[in-house]
Amino acid sequence: MKNEIIERFTSYVKVDTQSNEDSNTCPSTPGQWTLLNMIVDELKSIGMEEVTIDDNGYVMATLPSNTDKEVPTIGFLAHVDTATDFTGKDVKPQIVENYNGSDIVLNEALHIVLSPKDFPSLEQYKGHTLVTTDGTTLLGADNKAGIAEIMTAMAYLLQHPEIKHGKIRVAFTPDEEIGRGPHKFDVPAFNAKFAYTVDGGPLGELEYESFNAAGAKITIKGNNIHPGSAKGKMVNSLKIAMELQGKIPADEAPEYTEGYEGFYHLLSMNGDVELTKLAYIIRDHDREKFNAKKANLEKIVQDLQEKYGKDNITLELNDQYYNMKEKIEPVKEIVDIAYDAMKNLDIEPKISPIRGGTDGSQLSYMGLPTPNIFTGGENFHGKYEYISVDNMVKATNVIIEIAKLFEERA
Image 1 (cartoon, one colour):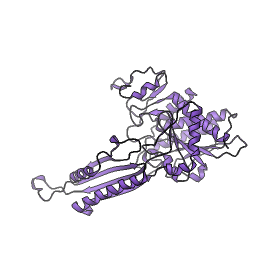
Image 2 (cartoon, one colour; image 1 turned 135 degrees about the vertical axis):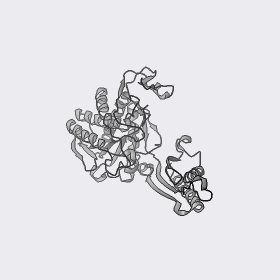
Image 3 (spheres, one colour; image 1 turned 45 degrees about the horizontal axis):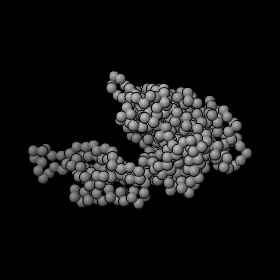
Image 4 (tube, helix red, strand yellow; image 1 turned 135 degrees about the horizontal axis):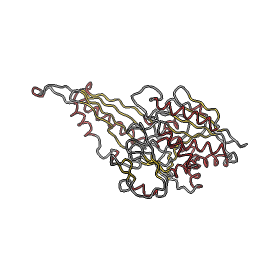
């Protein structure tokens, strides 16, 4: 299984599937189509049934039930796109066999080193087979590791019909990294009662709580006058932007928060004297605190509008997704099964809130309760990203064990 996973994973990461939020197509980039079509061919080749790909790039397939019991149909999902934070073009995965705990030279020419001094989590991977970057791109374990694990689990179940399971649906989706993953996902066509995204990080992660999320775009108009004659006439939009940022609680930023603490995050500020645009995201697990943060930003903008003119400052504030806990708690047995699956495999489950988003956040509100399980990856979205193949095998076995437990408990 280990070599099979390496082969699959390294072939997937070499395809540039970085998504693009400025694109209006779905998928947002051509590279995603390339990988999605590869997946279709692979699903057919391993023997999956009802393999489909729709006009928006959503791939679905079925592993038929092999039991006489009435077992709820469950699903497993992974997304094909990689993050926009760092380039995903020309990924050159490097295999580190039997990692010895020392520095890993990712790129000798550029002096890029993956060191346990900077990333202490590396120390727990001694003896593991690791896949790293070459220091010039991200790796794409988020979420191509999930694809490899789901595919390998399905292949294993097809090869081992003695393992009883109900009907299993799998799906591979575009554009999760830009928040559009479930936007065109056909929940009725998927036709599963419950699902799991295989999109988490280190070993044992099991998540069914996510942020409530909103995005804000603020446009500030100024008035540019030659500085030699600007007195009483110049309005500097950059300074207004700085004033706005100064009114946001300084300690409620990502770099100062953890666990269940929410935040305001200034993603970008671009402009000049005449015009400045700011982009924020707002996050909180608690719905009341989330709403309070949005109201606070609206009040800050209103106060500045009174000071500088309503037409000179505009705010576009939109909710993006909500805490999936509200939809999963009523069917918490699906979390319990994933928990027990890990325990059965001597994996210590680590239940924690997702400090980010996952397709499961939106899918749960679309009628498909979808918690999230680990892939084994670390340092997502950057050149220091790596993953343990040993833990990818464990994630694959968790998928298989979940399928077994649903059948046993039916």
